[in-house]
Length: 628
Image (cartoon, rainbow, N blue to C red):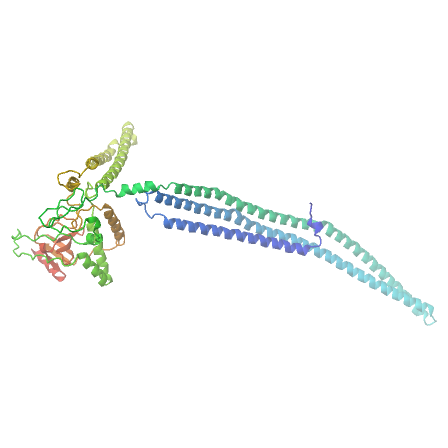
């Protein structure tokens, strides 16, 4: 249906003005709607990204990269982050393709509407002025006609009643009537002219000007509505482009959930924590009526070096002892007694033996921590940290401190890493050799001799890596052979002999021969708790992170060694006779004093082996030692 505002709405100028104004207001509201929607998309993307970052692993932990459920959760977080990225792209598309374009268009629309309605108002004013002119000429013509009629009536009456004295008045009245008739005739002509002009203006206004102006307004309104439709299509299309990507992300999340394998994760737990030891054997009956030596099973965890202790103590898996307190305390063994004869230094005074242990050093440190002030509390925390660092030092190179299964895995990982390093070094060596050949063929490109130092360095590095590889392969072969022997004995009925030995006694001897001292638990029972050690190492690293910016524990004095001491236990410090050391912590009643050498080495020494100078006496000792 063809609809023209110029013909259909020729008398609705004011309503058209209100309608177009409301249309512009609607467009502004739609722009505000799109803007708020883009803000919502940005806020949603920001919150999703923050959520993904919050629950994403802070660092690559081996535990989280080992299990399928951890990997699935990490993949879900990554896909969720991708969803946030695409939501941000949607918001950016709404801002650039819709909001900015509509803002520019609405400014143009307002200017165009103003122009069209100004033209309409001018046409309206013109027709109104023409109408006023017509009304003015009409009223003047009407007035002149009435006056001419009245003058003619007066003239006729005088002619009927005329006398000698009235003849002169009749002539004057006739002249006045003629003048009024002439004026009325002129007014009629002016009225006719004004009427013709108004009819022409009105025809032009309603047949030409108004249809053209209103048609332009109608075209403007249709373009506005079409622009709104285009903006809606663009918003929907932008949303439609994001939906397939979001759908792929959801599919990836579903695939990650489907990739979780509970049976594989439970097997992985076995691979991680399997020690390779046998369970403890049966505990034999102890007849206290006769002297009988208790036999120990081959696979038992009891320490075979603690025969003098009570036999009724619990096996180590059932001992509930605070490992942290044991690790942070000073060495468990009492300090060795000082030599009875004078040393080479001519010192005749025999140091007193340390007092009996009355309180654990860690207990004393915890009591100091709870009852001291803030500054002393910080020193106590530093002491706890350093005690943990001393106890959790690096293990032997052959990983003999680990259980057989864990040792095999550790060595295998080390061999794999060494092979990767060897491959990289070989590739670098081959590249250097090719470069040297190029230099030899084209001397202008470089000096071949300049590559010799680097080649020699790479060769030495390769030699060291190959030696390290051979050592680790030998250790791995040893572990594999022992594990295979252990599995054969276990499958062949290990411990079911008829010679009166407990089950698994040979297995215990073999395990004890591997690391007789490294597998002794702090309370003397046989232990292998690599998971606890790894746990405490991680806790130690977290504890160290809190004190990375701390200064070293201040020295409270100095000491001079009276006798040489060989620190063989972990956490002790070896010293020679007459050596000057810094005292870090006094004896807490257990016979051990913590000392430091050159701000790097720190450990415990027997208190009876040193002579301590604290506070002001330290300065005098240092000065006297310099004079000597």
